[in-house]
Image (cartoon, rainbow, N blue to C red; front, side, top):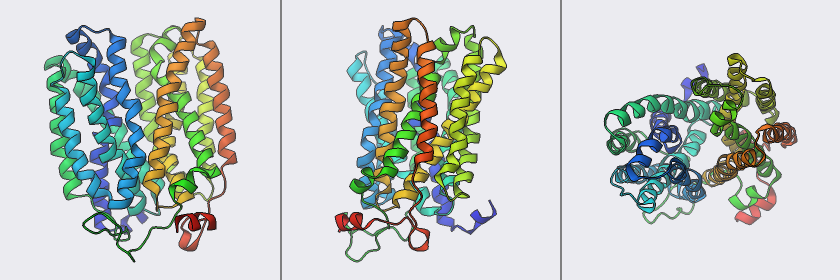
Amino acid sequence: MTSLRGYPTPAWRAAIACALAMALSPAALNSTITFFVGPVSRDFGWSQSQTLTVFNIPTVAAPIVLPLAGRWVDRWGARAVAVPGAALYALFTAATALAGGDTVLLLLPLFAATVCGYIAIMGVFYKVVAEWFPHHRGSGYSLFIGAATSLGAAVLSPLCQLSVDGLGWRQTYLLLALCILVIVFPAQYFLLSDPPRARESDSAGKAVPGAEELPGMPLGAALRSPGWLLTAGAMVLIAAVAMSVRLNAVSLFGDRGYSATVVALSLSVLLLSSIGGQFLAGVAMDRSRSARAFAPFVACLVAGMLAIFAARGGTWALLLAMGLLGMVMGAESSVGPYLVARYFGLRAFAQIQGTTLGVVALFGVGLSPVVVQRTAEATGSYQGPLITLTMVSVLTVALVFLLPRYPVGAKGEPAVADEARSEAG
C-alpha cells in the first residue's frame, strides 16, 4: 500500500473516475433487476418470467460489444470513448422510464443503455487501470473495479427497493439516469485521462506515425495462444459454477429447507466475501511470479460446492458455502484482467479483455444457469446438476495448474512472440 503513493496525481484522478463509474455500471445495476420485475410485470400485465427475460437479454447480449469497444479504446484512447458513452448511457437509461407496454419498446432502451454502459465503463477502465498502475494491476482491478462494483450494488439495492416502493419503477429509472449524468459523466470528463505513453492520434483518429506503440500481442495472435484459451476457459467455468448457484439460489436452497430470508442473507454474505476475494487475489497476483497463485482461490470453488452438499437446513453451513463461492467470484474479477495484461501486454489489451468478458458473460453467466435450471426441472432434483458443477470445479483447478509461465521481456513487460510481431507488422 505504501508503494502506491508513487503514482502520479492523474493516475489517482483516473482511479476515482473508475470507482465512481463502476459503482453505477451495468454490472452494479444488475443487482437491482429483481426490484423492477414485479412492478413492471403488474404494470404491463406480463408474467414475471417474461419480464425477467426482457431484463436479462441485455445483460447477456450486451457484452458482445466489448471487443469493439476495446478496439476504440486502443485506437482513440479511454477518454474519447468514455465521455460520449457516459452521456448516451444516461440518456437511454432515462428513455427506459418512457417505455410502453410492449416487450420491444422496453427491450430497446434497456439494451441500448446496457450497451452504452459497457462501452463507456466496462470497455474502458480495465485498460485505464492497467496503464496507470502497471506494478499494482491486480490490486487496482480489485479496488477500483471489483470492490467499487460490489459496494455500488450493495448501496443501490436497498435504495432502489425504497424508490420503487415509494415512487414507482419509472421514476426510479429517471433517478438512476440522473445519478449517471451528475456523477459518472462529470467524472469521465474532468478526472479521466490517458497515460502519456498511450499512443497519440490525429484529429481523424488515426495513429500518428512515429508515436510510441504499447508493447504486447495483437488480438488475433492472443486469441490463438494457449494462455488465452486456458485463461478464458477457467474464467468461464468459474462463472458457470458460481452463477448457476447464485441465480438459482432461491429454488435450489428452498428445496433443502431454507427460507427466502436465509437465502437472501447468504447472498449478502456471498457479496461481502467477493470483496475480500477481490482484494486478496489482487495482492496475491501482484506479489507472485506465477499464475498458480490463483489456485488457492479456485480451490474455494471446490470447497464451496462440497459445502453445498452438507447444507441441509443449517444456516451456518449455507453461509459457509456461499462465502467460499463469493471468495472465488471476487478473485475471478481481479485475476482475469491481470492475466490478460501479463500474458499479452497492453497493445490490444482492451480488445482482448473485452473478448474475454464477452465469452464469460455469454457462456458462464448467461447460458450455464439456464441449463442447470432446466436440467433440475426435467429431473425433478438439483442433485445431478450439483454433482456436475462439482466436477467442473475440480476441472477448473486443473486448468489453473496448466496455465503457462508469464512471458517476460525488457523491463518486465510481457514478451511478444516473433510470429506475433511479424503478423502485426
